[in-house]
Length: 425
Image (cartoon, rainbow, N blue to C red; front, side, top):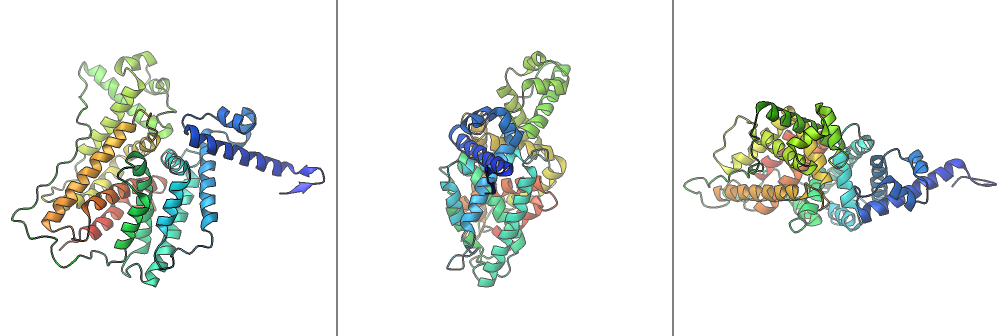
C-alpha cells in the first residue's frame, strides 16, 4: 500500500474503504439476500455514512457487480498456475464447480447478476460481457489442449464446445437453486465431459432397441399458461389490461420485478395507480399475468415444421429458438431477469419458475425416452441426463446471447448439440 510519512495516501485510503464496503456487502447479501439488503444496511456494516458509500457505488446494482467480481478474482487467484487439464489430461471443471458451490452465496449472487445485468443499461453489463468473452476464450484453450492430449475427440469443434459448456454450466447453476434435488453441478459436468471423448454423433452399433412397428407416441408439450383465462369484459378494458401487461413486461425486463413500482407501470401506460389496481388487484397478480402472457406468446409462435417423432421435436428446438430470438427478444430478456431474480423462496414468482423448470425437465426426459424407444437416441445416452443438459444449455445460451448477440447464435449452438445427441441415421 502506498504511504507517506504521515500515513496512507488518499488513493490508498479510498481503496481500503472501497474494499471494506465490498466485504460488508458480500456478507450482507449472503446472509440477508440481495433484494432484502439496502445500501444503508451495507453502509452501517462497513462503518461508513450512506453518503460516503455513494461516492464509491452509485447504485446497489453496481455494488453487486463489484461483489461478484471479487468472487471471480478469488477464483482466478485460486486457479492461477493450475493447468486446464488435470493429471489424467481431463478437463478439471468439476473441481471448479465444486469450489463455487462451497463458497457461501456465490451461486445466488452470480445468478442474480447474470439476469439483472443482461440489460445494456445495467452498470455491470460490460463487466459481465467481458467475463463471458474471457471464459469462452479460456474454455476454448482448455479444449484445444484436451484435443491435443487425446482426452477430447479430434473432431470436436473447440470454439463451439466452449460456448456450450459455459452456457450449460450457467444454466445448471440456476436449475440447482430451483430444483436442488435434481441437479448436482459437478456430477453433470463430469458426465458431459465423458461424451467429449467420443466422436461427434457416435453411437453403439445400430439402433438402441429393436425397431418398433410404429414410432413411440410424441409427448405433448406442458401447457405453462393453461391456468390463465383470457380477460372478459368490455373491449376498452381488455385493451387497457394488454397495455398494462406490455408496460410491466418492459419494465420488469429493464429493472427487475423488485425495483419496479406499480406507479411506474401506471405512468408508462398513462393511467393512475388506482386505475391499474382496478385491473390487477396486486403487483403479484400483475406479475403472474406477465409470465403467463409471455408463455402464451412463446407457445403460439409457429416454426412452420411438423414433427412426427420425438427426435424431430427435439431437433425442432433450434428452429423455435431462432424464431424467438428474431421475433421476441424482449420476452427472452424478461424471462432471463425474472428467472434469476425469483431465486429466493419468498419471491412472488419462485414457485412459478420452480414448476416451470420441473415441467420442462419432465417433458424433455419423456421426449428423449421416446427417442430411445425409436432407436434415435444412442444406447449410451441417458434420457434423464440429456433432458437436464438441454434445459440448462438453452437457458445459458440465452444469457450469453443477451450480452453479445454477435458472438452467440443460440439456434446454431442448440442444433450442433442436438445433432451430436441424436445423430441422423
